Length: 286
Image (cartoon, rainbow, N blue to C red; front, side, top):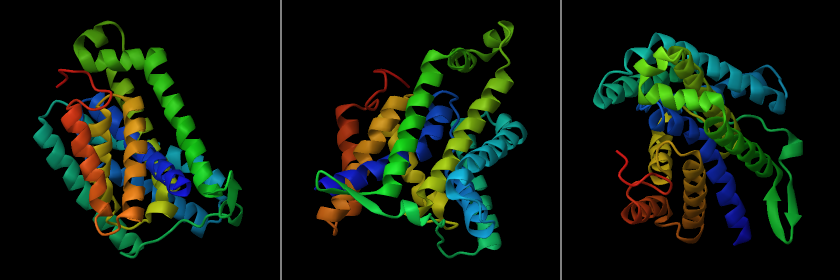
């Protein structure tokens, strides 16, 4: 039971770092970016090239993956996404879905359709026992990194000048510009960080989730469930929702293998019936 709980927490942490960027762009920037998973896929394949092909140590490759996908996000935000901020959510959905299929086609052509895994160092593949509970070292690493990211992201958005400027830019961009806030730069940095975190999640999750051209579509619903259950614009909500859904998914597949895949949807429905605005969403939010 405790081993299942541990594996569920590790899975939930991966879901969080994959989805937290979407929580920021959707909740704070009011941008429906369904192509968020494409940045996660890009990070996973970047790690695949760095570690498997070029021999870069896995831990050294992680910050490089973050920077590479953040740079990709910044370029795409300035050239493509900035053009759809003022458009309807339907236009944003159609635009981002188109990007998903373009990304899938490019990856399928370049890397092939088969599932691939990033080579994890042998030192991280072992297991340790704590109070009789078997814990994978790699999963402990994932939990530690994702926990640190969750804390840093929450503090950055809630306690810093940048977080205040971001909320002001979203609430009224015209007034924010009048106060001297560079709205374009704020949005670019926010989108780049969200993309970088997605890429980091793709690299960390490649060994747990697998990596193939269908990754963005296969996990898109999970990202949306995390943001919906946690409440938009809430990093603590996304974190708690990820843990809840990760534990429920792993436990369901372990104890009820015949219907385990549906447990996560049952949890989502139960939470939304109880709190339609999400765990940490504000009542009456739209």
